[in-house]
Length: 154
Length: 118
Image 1: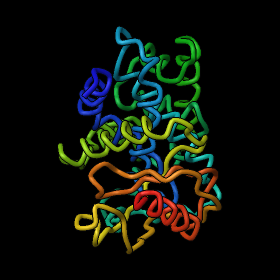
Image 2: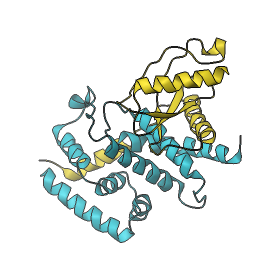
Image 3: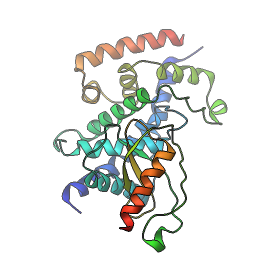
Image 4: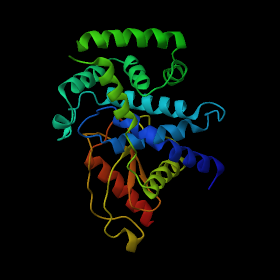
């Protein structure tokens, strides 16, 4: 196995949960499973791997590629019917929680990405690396998006 | 009364709790397919690769490809450009231009079979 392949394999094993997390945070269509999206992300990570600077932050690089892949997929298949919510969704989550999830899911990009990353504990600098926006822009957008969400949420 | 901060925290925790369900072997196979396919098929169509699931009842014996086509999770697609085969023969991956129908995929598959037999 070539060195690049070995390193890539190690990277995917380290970041597998992060990739899955990004994939599963988007509802695609009934025809696309999270497994399909995961595979698509792996393809894009491998294509971009040769230009990946090993000194840069690995997880934010993976997050950025995975997230961009998902945004592209969502755009590409936006005319296909969305999958139904899981059977246990209605029982498992309170109305309050579901209201918030629906609001976040309907938030346009890149604000949705910023909110998702923020909710998971990423800081401004990391979110800046994920989105390609400046730290100042991330700060401003996050503040504005949260204010709007809070207002809509009631 | 609705507690925005509490629900947002819960949302973040739900996201963070997601775990990749693949076993080590399954993940290795996914990675191997991606790497092998990309090296084998240099002229990658723009739309990327579509994961399709297949069954090969005779693949082990014939060392080639046969028979049962099961298009799972496939939206309507118009054209298949390049067929890709996983190294261990358990799954196939097809690179597609902006969509390929199951019928088109079968045709590409048949071509692959012919080439393989030759």
